[in-house]
Length: 115
Image (cartoon, rainbow, N blue to C red; front, side, top):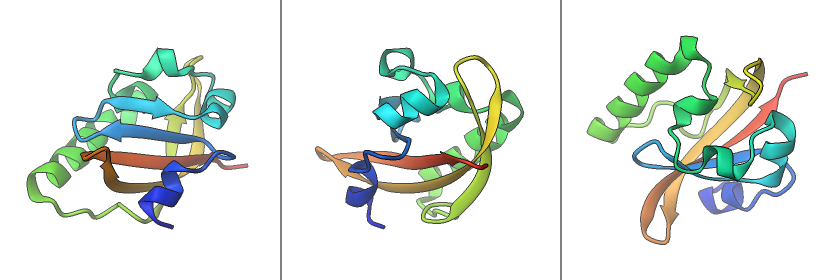
């Protein structure tokens, strides 16, 4: 799957963030699945949807990628928890890629809950 294909997904939950870790967009399936509306998340850090126990690891990994440019997790399927708007957490399959949107580096993740 390419970055362009990932950001065009309309039937599965997708979140898009900038290189600063700030959420810029979520799609309708993301809202339905996790209870967040775009107005709840746009402009907020990705840590808003990451359970507190995983936030430090996320920050370390994200910072390491930005400083080295070496991606160890992009393009792989990861089983991680995601936080719903109500504060509950769900194990979900994450698939993350990076690419350019309007000349700006972005990160997009397809996040599908595990049954």
